[in-house]
Image (cartoon, rainbow, N blue to C red; front, side, top):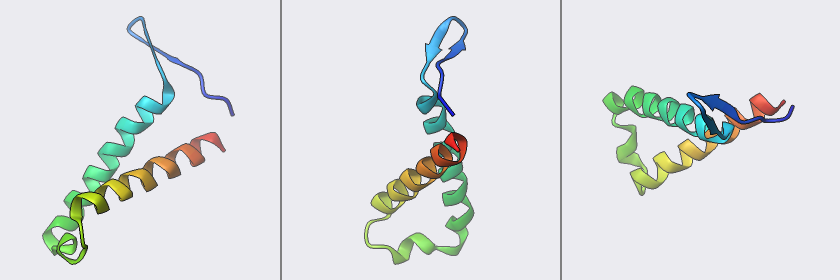
Length: 67
């Protein structure tokens, strides 16, 4: 499958930027879901861990959509 630019109110937007926003929302939802359990206390660098989860979610989204 090829990715095409999306016309958003007259502005062409790259599909990866929309996927990045969607992955951010998914990552935010995941971090919000695990916050009550205190799982981020057990990682060495919480911000780096959340960024790695974001990259994994974004990669999975790109792979699933490009399939």
